[in-house]
Image: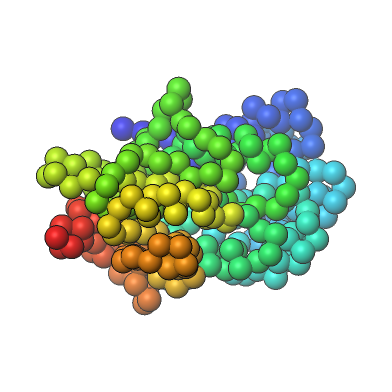
Length: 309
């Protein structure tokens, strides 16, 4: 069982890269522990800035440093980064075209028991609506590693959302197909296609494997690149199947499901089922309990598809 969360994978990549690249600068909002970035602060204190609980300043200072040639990585809980500092993300990062990578940690319902104030069920929609802002939700530690390695090579804005807890591996150190801004087909199928992002990809894959044993062929498309969305991959998988299901740890409005529905409706109209968090404050509990309650776990996705028969 994997015990390495995606946030730690981000730190591991930055630690290695910072040994030879002194322009890498990490900024936190009293969140180095939650972001697993404490080792970076210890090893590279002159490349680390602690902003305290001041998310707006976190983003603005990151943008200012980027204008001075730094490669800024700003880490803060996704619930605050995507709301409290939204204007700074829009103006100082995206509009100003600064080399800032915004890392939304503990995304979705990772802070389950803390309730709606600490949930980020709107960040995909909000960040995707900003021109010149890319949005990524890597599915496991190996894909997270590949993503951060690639983001270090460019100087454009991006928002990366990762969860708090470790996610079971989908890929491996030697088998992790990755192309920037291209979705990855985890498994092929002819009956149903599940298009998922973030930690929901593993859930979708587990459901697909169980359904396969029951004679139902399910494709799983890992849409880690929510923006820019891989339109070609969506159209290709839609042409193969009868029904499409999207799965996201997000509100049912403006996220992956909405985007996929637009593409399918315009190119190959067919039924699209959007599985997402409800439009209400979710129940209190651990992530696994919340997902099970709303039938967003593997068993829940499996039962939803069986109901289509």
